[in-house]
Image (tube, rainbow, N blue to C red):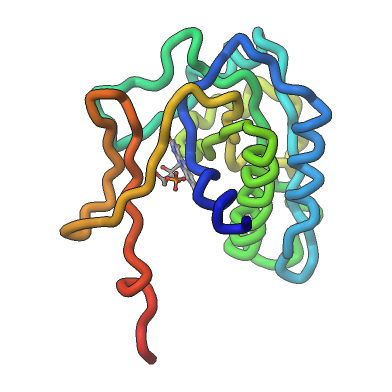
Amino acid sequence: MMKEIIVKTRSFRRFKQDRPLDGAILRHCIECARLGGSARNCQPWQYGIVTDPHRCADIFPYLGWAGYLSDWPGPVEGERPSAYILCVLNRLWLKGNDQEAQFDLGIATQNMLLAAMENNIGGCRIGAFSAKLAGLFTLAEHQELSLVIALGYPVETVVIETISNNDIRYWRDEKQTHHVPKRSLDDIIISL
Ligand SMILES: Cc1cc2nc3c(=O)[nH]c(=O)nc-3n(C[C@H](O)[C@H](O)[C@H](O)COP(=O)(O)O)c2cc1C
């Protein structure tokens, strides 16, 4: 069960744009993020939910998609995310260092994406966004936009492959299936 949902929880970048996401489900995803571990238990992350199609359209141009797919500029109109969750670091709540906060965000966003996939919603973390994106939102001085989660009902198939020749680049085949190479278990378990 657990592995099944983990395998299904891939990064999705093409969505059924006109199918809206239920705000209650997105709140549930953030509830699951909230329950994750946190260094020093300081829980420094806050989240903004965007579902309004006009606001989603405003956000989209600031995002960078699938860097390894150099001939793909990102999802076309009609396949763009129908919601975003914006991850904001609240520096007033941060007790440790930034690295600890980033660890926390990894845990939180994985919980979030697992909860989304349980509801057949796919997502993609977007770290490659323009600094200008923060200008669209009302953020206090101590609040820093750090990661964007793009969300929607996927219209693409994503499959896992085993890495060969240490080539970590994902690729798309002629049917536009997205292939994600993962290192093998034997390569990542080491004897110490
Ligand atoms: C912290 C982080 C930042 C990411 N930023 C981007 C991004 O800016 N654009 C993008 O298309 N994918 C982004 N991704 C998605 C990765 O490319 C993806 O996780 C990787 O290709 C493995 O695919 P998988 O998530 O399906 O296992 C990001 C993932 C993580 C964890």
